[in-house]
Image (cartoon, rainbow, N blue to C red; front, side, top):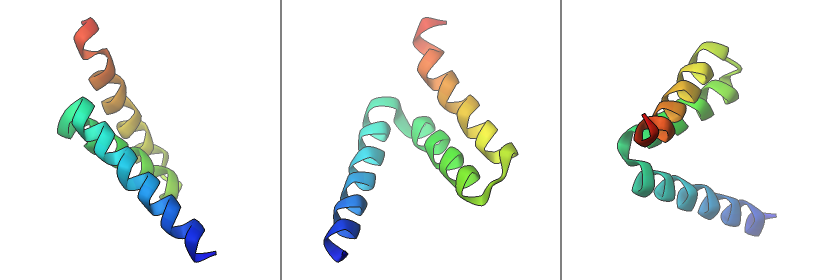
Length: 62
């Protein structure tokens, strides 16, 4: 069981680093808000995080 927890922690940290490297600090903030909102079951915070991520992803297309 501890091996699964370690592997999932490594995956999460790696994914966050990938998002921050590719989309910058705002991508990380959007992912953080989305995650916190989903865990806290707060639709406002998760919606703000989703909008931030959408704006970061659509930024080059605009």
